[in-house]
Amino acid sequence: MFTVNDNYLKLPGSYLFSTIGKKVAAFKEANPDKTVISLGIGDVTRPLTSSVIKALHSAVDEMASADTFKGYSPDLGYLFLREAIRDNDYKSRGVDIDVDEIFVSDGAKSDSGNIQEIFGADNKIAVCDPVYPVYVDSNVMSGRAGIYNPETERFSDVIYMPCTKDTNFAPEIPSETPDIIYLCFPNNPTGSTIKKDELQKWVDYANKVGACIIYDAAYEAFITEDDVPHSIYECEGAKTCAIEIRSFSKNAGFTGTRLGFTVVPKELKSKDTSLNPLWARRHGTKFNGAPYIIQAAGAAIYSDEGKAEIKELIGYYQENQKVILDGLKSAGYEVSGGVNAPYIWLKTPDNVKSWDFFDTLLNEANVVGTPGSGFGPSGEGYFRLTAFGTHEATKEAIERIKRL
Ligand SMILES: Cc1ncc(COP(=O)(O)O)c(C=O)c1O
Image (tube, rainbow, N blue to C red):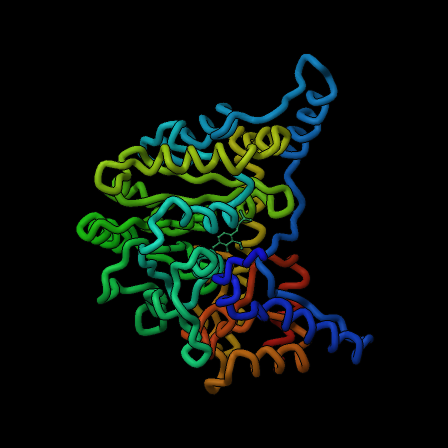
């Protein structure tokens, strides 16, 4: 008789977005005359930009002719895209990354979930609390997290780094030494970030204790402040201790189009073993490449026209960030995030529980957000709003919250 990977049975149910969906559906059924506005899920609403659409059309046409048709993509991704990434995302910031250190993929979720495969089964991970759940869940699936305690909402073998108001919503170096440290800046869900000198401390720490930082920079394009690093490789010594994951989802609207990449520097080693060939092997064995047409579309964001469009696209959501931040502040709410990130982290009034605030907002303002407690116990008493809605819906939602 076959058996199952019983690590999967250790996962607590993922009720967050399904519970939200059920509550919203029930409310809509009972109140068909009400319009519900969602600032809940971190999905974009603006269409792909015109140079991306043009590149898609032309790549589709190439697929229609035997002369230009493309089959499997090269293992690491097309060189034209990896060169554009190297030049625009790294060289332009004074960072030297080789094209064979860049691995093109179908997005940051798969990469951030899969990357743990190249690490030893006994490695100990450290994560922020609250956290993007993929980092923990993928380690649970591979047996690295221990046992879940429903009372503490924590796994026995995971090091949690609380990110609270007291820590400025950033993690502190943990007392127990981890082997793998997941950092995500700008952060989902808190919208916080850290300055370059603070990130440098993490890099120095990781190099000192022999840990690897997995740096998720999916929201890098939303950074507005000069002293906030766009890449961990802006820090000295990061190439010997960090992997960086990026996405085309939030900067270019590729959530449904799917494209991302991971940088694994050749200098990153465990004793004498370099991680770059391990990830290359994993990529070659288990992944057959992002589609040519999508990689061609991704490269279009690095053209002059593409860059201008992306700036405008991000600017659109940044206007929403400001509407949410300013509106909530003027209504007396305690808010953070929203400056270098499309997420606004709101303290619930009177220490109301996150889910109770969710119900109040849904029932009385007909606005949907995400309870902070759904991202980890340190998120209790907080609430996440996203800036990915339309201008009209965002303004209307904030007016409704102000009237509460
Ligand atoms: C921190 C973080 N990383 C990765 C992702 C997923 O990105 P992608 O769409 O490229 O899979 C998300 C999506 O919400 C995210 O918040």
